[in-house]
Amino acid sequence: MTTRCTLAVATLSFVATVAISSIAPPLNGQGATDARDNDRRAKFTHNNNVLPEAGSARPGSAVEALAAFDTQTNGFTDQPTFDADRTVFEDVEGISDGLGPTYNAQSCRECHQNIVTGGASQVTVQRAGHLTDGKFFDSQGGSLIHSRAIHPDATELVAPGENIRTFRISPSTLGDGYVEAIANHTLAELRDHQPASVRGTAVIVSVLEANSQARIGRFGWKSQHASLESFAADAYLNEMGITTPLLPIENTAGGRDVSAWDKVADPEDDGDDVERFANFMRATKAPPRGAITADVRAGEQVFNAVGCGVCHVASITTAPAGTPINGGVLTVPAALGNKIIHPYSDFLLHDIGTGDGIPIQPTQEYAETANKIRTAPLWGLRSRNRLMHDGLSFTREEAILRHAGQATQATSLYQALSAAQKAQLLAFVNSL
Ligand code: HEC
Ligand code: HEC
Image (tube, rainbow, N blue to C red; front, side, top):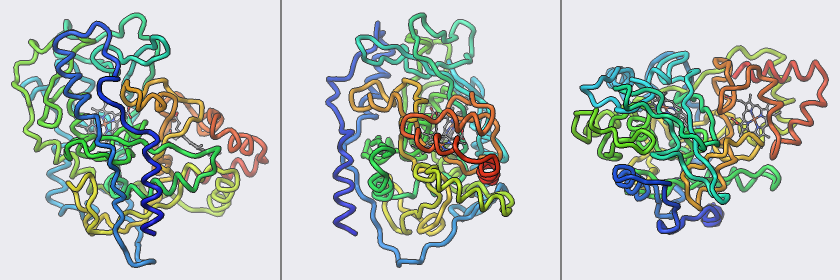
């Protein structure tokens, strides 16, 4: 076990880091953009040392994770703490809290609420950039284009020429504490067991709160984060315009310094909110299954027979309690350790022909992520009706038929199914 894990992790370095000097500079960078970009580049450059995070659990001792849309803690925190942390996640921030100057929404819940706080939503954000000599450049100030501002003159516009564009829809964060508790070596083994033609990519990213320690990413449409605290700091800055000790420099509006509109000194939050967002998400239960009928059971067999389950992995066991994760900053607690979850994802990136052309960072290391997307976790699917990263697939079948590239064989096998088998498969995915 130990030997295999070591080997698996060693092979991860194929998406290895590059020297900062080879990172392309932004076009027409301005002072404010440069300071922010330098800070971000430093923080988002990991040390390339992926620890296996292999703890030892008694074989057969894993138990099912808790699953419900009930706004009750999974045991990571007690119920009063969970309720208080949820309130912070739901808080509507205003200008006096540091909102903006550019932002997308005023609270985490505005985009993460369905069926309960922490869930998914139909809210999309936009990203843009362009290619020069085959190399990707973020739109000035970053590929995320904010759609709101605290003053009309601070509005961020998509510059002409930023012709690589996408929408990205808001995913669910429910059950993400369990996902954070999956050991690096577990994700690496999933990858190594996939047939070469469908093998996913494990991306290595920085854990911001652990001094940029490397970890396998698993959150976001590109698996661009490995820790919920890192994601929360990123979202607080990039969705709401609130700076924190982890990301202390304000965003620009397309490279224009608009900080004069925002009178609150940075960092606008002392980091407490970020921890509470992370602890709220860590304490959420996983999305629960719907009714399991005979058709649903039959549909699950069809799902596996045509190869959907190779990427949409049905069951993963989290690292045992006591395992240090996130570069040692977090130890897996009993509530999250040695739990069996059913995310229907491998949390790896795949090229199924839907890539939006925008890499995790505009660097050589992440260039291959431009046309790959994380296998969308299908848990909670029955509560969503706008599908795929851009939310532009209206029906389950349209989403399935968009699968090409590495999923070509699964799509062909799906198309060859009888009408009855297709109906069973759809009954199954609609039970998730
Ligand atoms: C304007 C809408 C919006 C707001 C506000 C927002 N998010 Fe998100 N969130 C998104 C979108 C869109 C994604 C996917 C982004 C991507 O991958 O490019 C996302 C992804 C996430 C993820 C990854 C979930 C997963 O399992 O992959 C986490 C965690 C998260 N957000 C936490 C937060 C927190 C915490 C806040 C508040 C500080 C917040 N978000 C505010 C839209 C939003
Ligand atoms: C090679 C890996 C792979 C295989 C095989 C695969 N998928 Fe996917 N699936 C993905 C990826 C990656 C996405 C996200 C794509 C995007 O958003 O652009 C996805 C997205 C989806 C979605 C949309 C979920 C959402 O929340 O928007 C559904 C539904 C889905 N897949 C069902 C299936 C079914 C059914 C099969 C088998 C016929 C299948 N997939 C086979 C990788 C795969």
